Length: 90
Image (tube, rainbow, N blue to C red):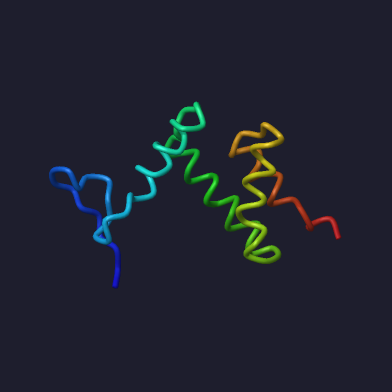
């Protein structure tokens, strides 16, 4: 069963299962952390970073690569560029 976005009334930001959609969840989580939610461009870069990490090694590398980038204070664009270089020197 695919999750479709509900766009009317109180259901806005929720999928058919009743859970929050990704953008709404990220915004709420960012608020709890006391930081701004990521922009659309940042989300796209982070998803690309996760994809590079997962395809270059194992799936587990995807979320950890994003965590490492955040811990290093690297913006998503720089983190993605660096990730594309990892392992290419061998």
